[in-house]
Length: 305
Length: 305
Image 1 (cartoon, chains in turn green, yellow):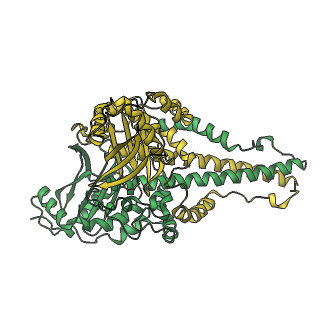
Image 2: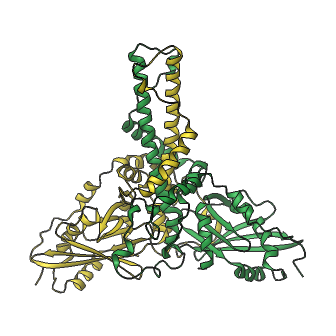
Image 3: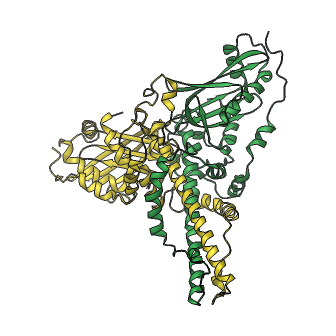
């Protein structure tokens, strides 16, 4: 993997997993484009794939797929980005066409568009992602989300109990409702939760809406809990995770720091807390703004000879 | 991988991820023991490892690690199980000792106990798990949990709003509280949620309790959403995930069925609904009972010569 892609990890961690439908394939995608680099992550929840491309690699592939292209990478990268991002953001492709090929475990997104009056081809060749990446981009954030949502449920349950106490006090003092239909039942957390699971689990399974999985609220929550850490341990660079594990002493390789209670907090130093506020602030992170800032402004003409 | 291990997948999917602390290492573990086979899954939320052993492999390793052992596998497997399960269930090891070694990406749990008056050694040699396993055992269940918890939050929010309407009606009809402290504020979902995230995200990060991650409620919810499907598609057997992907047509390889809206519903046929009820019933699944049923009852004497 390309070590220069590390900065992309921090951006990617704040990106939501966007549902995209390409060529009939339902996927979740994350993408990050800088001036002349990009990183794309894809998952169908059965597998996870990624491609990280630096400027030189992009230039080589552009030549491979567009024989007559003679422009510097910056000259066509903005076109590539503008043609691909709508697809990778779930918005469909506009004039550009995209299809999906899967072979030998590689998921390739083939893009065809027009640049300076000539066809422009691109392929995002996404290879199976290492488990370390799956853990950092999906497992730890999703577990943190579940823990936060569960904690919020507990708190709302207590709030419901307090409102029941208030209602009971009104009733005991002889208060009556002007409209009977406004009367609510006393909230019983355990019965309510069991009943909810029984009713909603089948619905969730058969619900074809917001496929596959993250609605807007969950995307915001994901962005909040997944906001990157200051430092990154070797396992979180996306090379061979095996290679990055120090052999001895064994304990130190898996000991989890004081914040071990929170899986998505298992950063290199086990440091916790201080960055929490910053990460909470990420609730309002504005993806479009980030992207604008690094969007190249070059003209896209005269690129072919 | 061992295709005979497939039955283990269904059991494992209903097992909770139990926090275990071995030799100072904080891990989450799942294990399944049959009469003379076992499967162990481990994760530190940075990586995921597994070992699946059938009877023949267990017999070979027993000979390798215990030169003087001459007993049939069934004769010492029950001892192995009884010595290992307390460790793998997070209960500590009793008389047996266990330590963790990590080398070349393999996490080895070394067990030392006493059998028929002689030392008995075992090693659980867990290799990096394929992404398909990480998706089926962690990613899809965790996303389903987040979606269910979020849906429950929405419903409880509506319930709070209805109680506020009831309270408002009492007040408008002149009702007063006998104790001022019983009065609650009107529930504002958006403000409440933003405030909750701001306050609780840092706490979650710095909370060293219930390490690492699943409390009892989340474990029950995990068991409910992760209950196995009737059939399994090739990607979900734990061989090389690449090998299992049909090359063409590309669309069919990633198209998600009518239940695509729910990632952990992406089963072979995309079939949905009917099994939902059965899976909801898994809320009350009793792990101990399952284990009892397959626990061998052989005596553990005269195994060495």
